[in-house]
Amino acid sequence: MQGRRTLIMLLSLTLAATIAACAADAPAAGVRTLEAAAAGASARDAGIARGIVDSALPIETLLHRFRATTTDTPSVLTGGADSPEALTRALLAALEAGDTSAVRNLAISRAEFAWLYYPHAKWTRPPYEMGPGLVWLQISASSDKGFVRLVRRYGGSRLRFESLACPDTGAREGPNVVISGCRVRFAAADSATRDLQLFGSLLNRDGRYRFVSYSNDL
Image 1 (cartoon, helix red, strand yellow):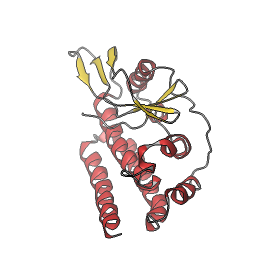
Image 2 (tube, helix red, strand yellow; image 1 turned 120 degrees about the horizontal axis):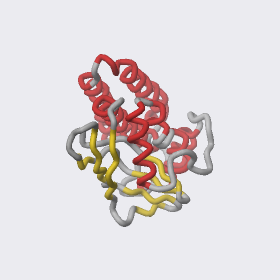
Image 3 (cartoon, helix red, strand yellow; image 1 turned 30 degrees about the horizontal axis):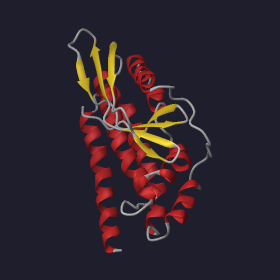
Image 4 (cartoon, one colour; image 1 turned 135 degrees about the vertical axis):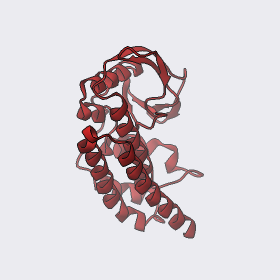
């Protein structure tokens, strides 16, 4: 129990540090975007707190409680794209247009995490066993930080897609396939071609792809 309390404290500190890092990275023109990201993180943190208190409960109970905080019960992935390349092209197009809502909507939602992703993930089984609230806190904090950096660096810039390199196979988790380690070759405006990780893992479910997070190496 003491170990879990220590983990919770570390995650809370990580969330605070993430928001502070985003603030340091954000330019004046991106203040509203940053505020929205920080507000979203704070709201999630408040909602998750109830589940953390009872973190010694079985995963099934924690998942039931976490799902009760969502307003939707999706049975399939919607939006996104039908291939990793199409999803990446959509990301670059949204960044070029400065459409932060479109960027957000390419990643899985809290409800999709609760109903489609988490139930089949390694976090539901030993030795990785961890409740959905803590997993979502980690994913969303890292994604928020990556999202702000993406918008800060490339929002409103002309972007040219060249190629996408992903591993040939992903990790099979029930009906899901999770693909990690993709790198994007692209050019911004008239600059040289870059080869970067612009997002974390991809979720493939029934041939539909969405980003799990925007964790990146910017």
